[in-house]
Amino acid sequence: MKVTPIEGPFGVTVEGLDLSRDMSDETLRALIALLHEHQILAIKGQSLSNEQYVRFGYQWGKPLNFMIDSHKRDDFPEMIRINNKADTPQRYRDGAMHWHCDSTYEEVPASVTMLYGIEAPDVGGETLLASTSLAYDGLDEAMKARIEDMTALHCLGGSPELPGEKIPFFPDQTARRGVQRNLLVMRHPVTGRKSIFTSGTAFGAEGLERDEGRDLIDTLRRHITRPEYTTHYKIEAGDIFLWDNFQTLHSATEIEYSDEDGKRRLLYRISTKGIPDLCRQAEAA
Ligand SMILES: [Fe+2]
Image 1 (cartoon, rainbow, N blue to C red):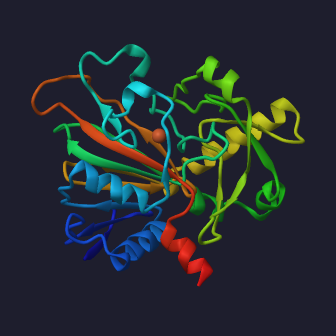
Image 2 (image 1 turned 90 degrees about the vertical axis):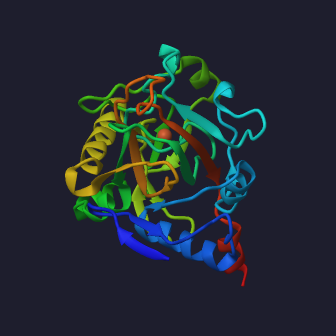
């Protein structure tokens, strides 16, 4: 397989691999290592059945049960539908157009998210990505020391918004799920690499006054989304695009809601929790 850097500070694409024929441990180990090293990974030119895609998803962890039932396929509930159909209700539009990582409002946040491109619009539909591990490396020593053992508080839609963002808030879900706690400095569960773990759900930190905690999260979110830590990728048909939620934030960009040829988008998302079985086996060996 051919590995090429994505334009920008991080990420790679892989070509010359057919996952419908080769999902061997050796291939999967290579892909897992690429994702952990480069934070985002685009596997080009794939043509998988739903069964094969779901099997691929299970190689990265346990697929999570998404909170919005209508977005899940009835036959493959691991697969979360993302499209831009013209009749999409307003409440489901642009819900991902802010910097976040996935499911940080749950007790166990998502580890990996993958999107399989079935249809892509001719124009638009880019995903923005920020490396939270590169951003951690770029913090000054005083800030690293300040946040080293801090615990961040998370709830749905909790973070301070950055310019141009609108973080969706779900009061019912928040009441049900409550406040989650995560270390602000994430140690990657496989590599141990440090990153800043804020998402669009962090709103404060344990031991800090409300405003002070909010200011700290705001400062870190601004830092992470600086141009030197960000890139973008447009998912084309046949791409499987993965990001490591422990080392990245992502944001959707504006897309037209349309059923017309050349404007439709259909992606199938699978997000997992925990680490790949292959990494667990490596640990035990
Ligand atoms: Fe997301």
